[in-house]
Image (cartoon, rainbow, N blue to C red; front, side, top):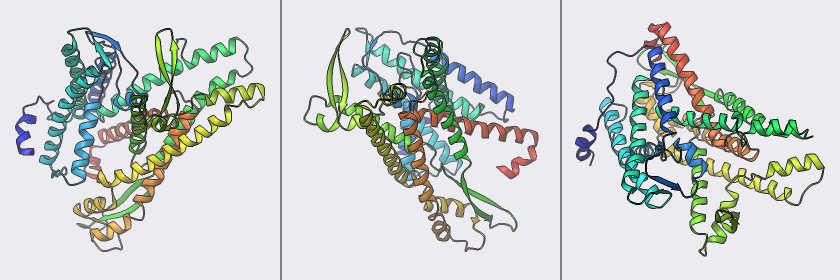
Length: 461
């Protein structure tokens, strides 16, 4: 199958790899240029779009760096889907590609690009055929082509950043989207921003004006907690078998799986809400989600009031009830229920993140067995133990599964806490932004050091 697809992905246009690694300033300029272009594309409306029926869950827009109403309506969705599918196939052994070789990496990237192009058209067709994005009569095909083109442009911008810029384009787009949303909500000069809420509370002399500062405090605390957690790790000493005295440490971070577990958990919750809405008039409604009709000026809308879908979304009213209690000293009848809702939501998010974390370490090739084989194939061993992959695996089994569970629970708790207490952005959005920005900081510092001391490249690479 790979041989049959090879002529197709080899015929796709490709961003040329620089023959000489560009200097740091040049790479920084390429990255900034791509970032500016991403912001411009996210504000270009597609020609022929009549209306948007419904609102995609915020989790999808955060993960996919999408902006409904623009040509980036599906964002990096096709790239993410293609990457996850291939990583699962390769990690499980169903697809025989050795990504540690140059040819294997080229095959993997080619297949990923081909799949991403296919999903660009497929997802654009799904968005328009289901009526989520409504086109003017006769403009359906043109709308599909524009939405697909926007995603394909992001595929190549990601390639530009990877080869000519700094870091990954996917990470850059996600961080840019979350950061834009955070500043728009927290510091924008418009009626819905938290800044205007704070200024209005102060101007009218509200005795609880300081509660408008809670989203800023929550966001700042989450930033500090995540940055601190990035430095928590277990260092396992390793040595090279080809020479004495040559060794180092293999770090197992608390955030060993990064934010992958909570991304999958929030994506699952968003799908549950979508399924509940589609099944609102079926016998499954009492279980998945109970909706009540609300008549508005624009027509009839639906409000989620019960069922599983209700408890997998954060209680947005909790903070309002807490503010009422602080200002009046009276516990309203809704406050205990909202507290219960918050506890259930954080519990479900944490447990789901742990489950996905345990599953991901095996499917993605990050388990003790796979890491032990990688270290052994690189000629590494642990001082004082036999040079045997089985010995490495036994030692890694003491740490990796436990750290993966702890890290998954940690990101689930932090994301749930942020959602419940209403930070400036969703818990997952802030986690992603902080993690990506921190990784970029490490990359930039490393590049600066290598630029100043070129001899270190032989040691660090």
